[in-house]
Every structure is written in structure tokens, then in C-alpha cells.
Length: 381
Picture (tube, rainbow, N blue to C red):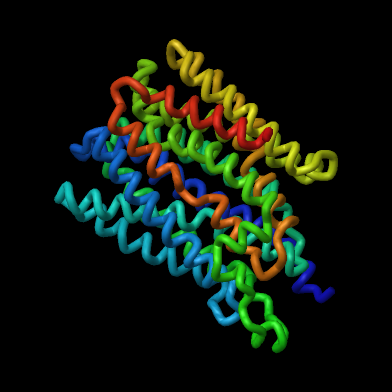
């Protein structure tokens, strides 16, 4: 193995993860605060999130299929393109004074955010597959550290500076992300001529044949979609839940920071955990703890208990975020490497978020609880 192949990419990839999850926190976790402050209603926010989710659901398989093709740009270049588009959108958001334009720009930003998640994860797994030294769990753990820090900081800043602090934060994070990606030493793996000129398999272009090829993946994906629904609902309406518990944007930021900190032991030790336990067992365990957290959120009488419930993030999302990526990487053939990671994040939460928005006065936490229970049932069976 050449020296360049053995280079440890964990530090630089950890920075990429950290910046991405700060970007995620600013756009998604503070979406309720920003949009409510801008004059949107809960129903309008739900419709906006639903449309963004549907748009991302359509684009993810298309872009992932393109990324898997030998002649396509590298994952690094694709991510840079998405960040550049995000920069244009957020600059427009910062200058916008129209409710409709703000909705269009913010909805597009949410769609891009959801679109990027599988490609950020694939960048790390592809680097590992190319022979680089990279501790994915540690790098993803640093993403949670960064998420916790920015949630806590933004929770304080938004109280003093107001909603304008959100687009400014995203602009800064996007510029930093573009800079670190330029420095990240990644290039697309070269395929041999036979593989490059070979006709595409039918499963590459036909999703039905793809799921027939990976029957086990199809069942697990169904359960994990419901888990993702629960997680996204909590993020999309975190501000409203904090308000219902007697808090505000500062308490929402603190709760998000606690949840992210609780992920750290699991993510930092995941390299050891994955050697001791099978991925399918880890995913089932995550489903159980997602359900417990959802029930705790439903029953929490106030902010202190709401803070305490965040500890279940440790064996919920903390396990899910790393185990899912390793599961897909182990199960799939190289030509299908990116597509399934994208499908793992297909944002079907659009439909549920829309339903929640229409019933926001009576069902803000019940829906999240139901989605976690359904995910547990799908994973166990």
C-alpha cells in the first residue's frame, strides 16, 4: 500500500462531519424558530417541510445513481456543488423580504440538506474502501460534538440577535465546508476498462429489481424509514415541543446539545462495538431506544424532564447513525455502494410532517411516538 493510501484521514473527515452537522443544526433544528419568527404558521412550516422532503426523495435516487456511474464526478466534487448551491440559496435568504421567496429559499435549503446526508457518509466509507485509514465512528462523533456546540451557542445567540443569525451562521459554515473539502485528499476510484464498458445491470436502473436483489435490505429499510421519521419530526418541531414544555429557543438549543453529547460515547466507541455485536442487533436496539425516547418526550411534564429524556439518544440515534452506514457498506456490492445509503435517507417524513402540521395543536408528540413504535415493529419482524 502506498503512503498516500495509508494516510490517516480521520481528522480532516471529522472536520467535514463537524461542519456538516453544524449546518444541519442551523437549518433543521432552528427551522421552527426562524420560520415562525418570519410570519409562517405551523401548517405552512409543515407544508414547506413536506415539499422539501418530496423534492429530496425524488432527487436522491437520481443523484445517487449518477454518482455510482464510473464517468460521474467524484463524491467530493458532487458535495462541493451542493454546498455551492446552498451558498447561493442562503445569501438569497439573507436578502429576502418576501414571505413567498423566503419559503422557497428555505424549503430548497432543507431539500439540499437532506440530499447531502448520504453523500457525506458515503465520502467516508468510500475513503475506507480505497484503503485509507479512517475511523468513521470517531469522525461522526466529532460531528455530534460540533452539533451540540452550535445548538447551545445558537440557542443563546438567537435570543439576542434574532432569526437573522441563522442565515449568517449557515453562510459562514458553508464557506468553511467548501474550504475543507478542497483540502480533503479524495479522488474517484478508477474502474478497469472492462467494468467501465460493461452494460449496466438491470438492478441499477430498476428499483424493483434492486430490492429483489437485496431482500433483507428492503425489510430493514422499511423499519429504519420509520425511525428516521421519528427523528426528523423531533428536529423539525423541536422549537414547538420546547414551547409546549414551557421553554423557548434557548431551551431547545440546550436540549439538542444534550442529545448530541449523549451520542458521543456510542460513536467514539463504535469501532469496538461493531467488532462485538452484529449490525442487525444494533439496529434493533436503536429501534427500542427511539421508542423509549419518543414516549419520554410525550410524557415529559416540563423542561427538566425533557432534558433528561435526551439521554436515550445514546443508544438511539447514536447507534443508528453509524450502524446503518456499516450495514449498507457490508451488504452491498461496489457498484451499488452509494445508492442504498441514499435510499436509507429517503425523506418519507414529508407525508408525516404534513399530517403533523395540520394537527399541530393536538398531536405534536403523539405522531412522533407512533412512528417510533412502528419502526420497532418493522425492525423486530
